[in-house]
Image (tube, rainbow, N blue to C red):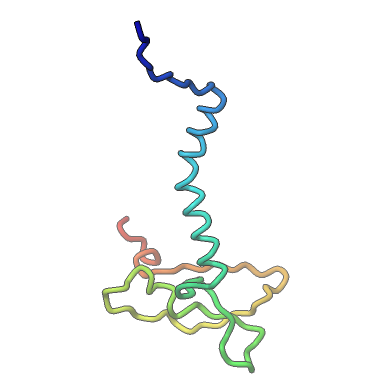
Length: 111
């Protein structure tokens, strides 16, 4: 009588299974981190930092509020640029700087 060839079930050891599951879980995170790194490396997108250097060379020691900083929040609505107040890039000793952005914040909405 001939014996049938039955498939042999291979088992993976627990450490290998753990490493495999860990790699599967980390692959999307690693992909997103790599994509973010590449986008920052090639400076993709607009600059939405809150402050920027003054564009005029006569005022090179001053900074201003980025006029496009709020555009990331109000893309489809009419956007009003902030006031072009200037301030020294290097804060003088003994000086306190307090920046309040947004009219609803200034008037204390909703309280």
